[in-house]
Amino acid sequence: MARIGSYELHTIETGRFGLDGGGMFGVVPRALWERHIRPDDRNRITLALRCLLLEGDGRVILIDNGIGAKLNDKLASIYSVDYAHSELHRSLDQAGFCAADVTDVVYTHLHFDHCGGGAATGPNGPVPVFENALYHVQRAHWEWALHPNAREAASFMKENMEPLERAGQLHLADGPGTLFPGVETIVVHGHTEAQQVVKISDEERTLVFVSDLLPTAAHLRRAWIAAYDVRPLVTLKEKARFLEDAVKGGWHFFFEHDPVTIVGTPVRTSRGIAVAEERPLEEL
Ligand SMILES: [Zn+2]
Image (cartoon, rainbow, N blue to C red; front, side, top):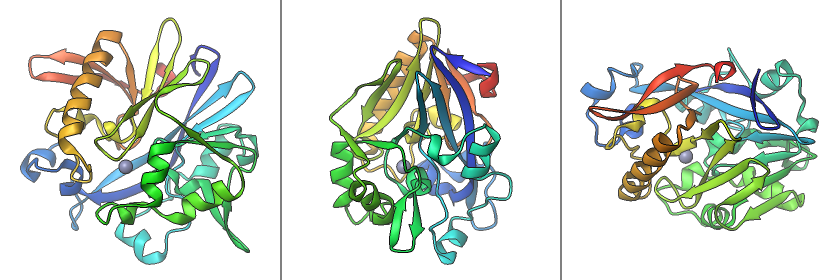
């Protein structure tokens, strides 16, 4: 069992999906990125939808919750959504929890692959899945997602957002800060407006849920930035600064989308900062 401060940590795998490899690696040629992740015959790479649950201090905190079950057949096929090996509620159950236990849901951002599991279709429209939870989102991101630009609009689905506000379960945060004792957010703007990555620390260790700031371990390379990012040059700067802080602080990363690496520790190498040690969460 992994533990940081007063929290027990659980990996919650919520399924797998596929995104276009070119989209994931931006200007990097396929000849380079396919050495790290092999695409399928439609150029898609298989990615994890891996979330993190913290239990302690009377709270059960879930960071992101995958795609969920609301995508229509066409979209589920385009994104190759696969729940054969894992699914949100099965994984919660295996970890000893149910949806009603969750007191807080922290959304790094509102792209559908991060928040689709938080709302389900009810008889009168979509409703929050975590009925007892407060859902935490950055206010600037919430506003951005409610009125999306055309390039990013397909990633924001109103059915993942509106039920939270309707049910009075939404907490909008203004900028980075401490969400709970030992749990802080860092806010970055390259991937989308006001994405929050989540830093869990005690005196000895820091684990950062890096979300789409570093979707996979391969994205530690400077220019490996997803084409999905709305401000790639901002990502370039934010990533460099974040990686410097991480190496200095001896932080560990928890990867949401990396198909293989769950926890990785960045170190400085002759070719830049890279993940040196990969391990399961239990060996943190
Ligand atoms: Zn995203």
